[in-house]
Length: 302
Ligand SMILES: Cc1ncc(COP(=O)(O)O)c(C=O)c1O
Image (cartoon, rainbow, N blue to C red; front, side, top):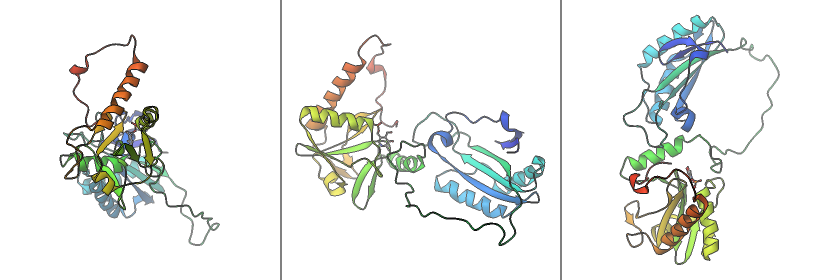
């Protein structure tokens, strides 16, 4: 790797460039990138790459923070400064640094924009070299929701679609099946039973979800762990989501439909009380104390 980098408008040594820990690229994969080949010190198809960059950025509701003609000029001028003749430019644009929250920061912080080069050996002549060996794999992009992975851009976009239109949480729905929220698991109550989607390709094994399972077992409440249909959600007696920061949060509305009796239902309350008892039992003692009333209610943290 060459030791020069173009970092937020300045050319500097790679070692002097620092990206913040709370950069959204680092924490949410909230960013886009380009790779541009250069030959003989000159970028190839640079305009096409710049146009794709704009489209990718628009796809995550982000703007490229400078006109792409200027950016293209910067790249073209930067390559010779590195002294490399054959290689590629790696460019990355993220939503910048701000306090961690799935919601887009308002006002928007300055984006992080950087690029640098990697040297490549000269390209092979047509037909030269050994033939490649390919392996067919299952297309699981992205069906590994059980991994608590920082590739959160799909969740970030969903969350912002919801909060941008007056909702608190987005819930993923595919082929009539409700899997989980952008930052939560979801449970429906039908009669005296809970229903929730199994963890795995579509659902993160939430720790709060796990605690609900343990409490339900103790309380003698049955849980049906199976794909949850949207029509069951809409006709649920009660609905609640779970997450570490929100514990159990009862749901009043699904899209424009009211759920249950317009207040927190008895089973949700019962399990949430048991949850609180467990929190108290496990966190009692001589920690620093602060009045709960002095804290605002948490609604939209992850
Ligand atoms: C996609 C998703 N599902 C479920 C959860 C709930 O998990 P936990 O109860 O461990 O906070 C989260 C929490 O951030 C999440 O991001």
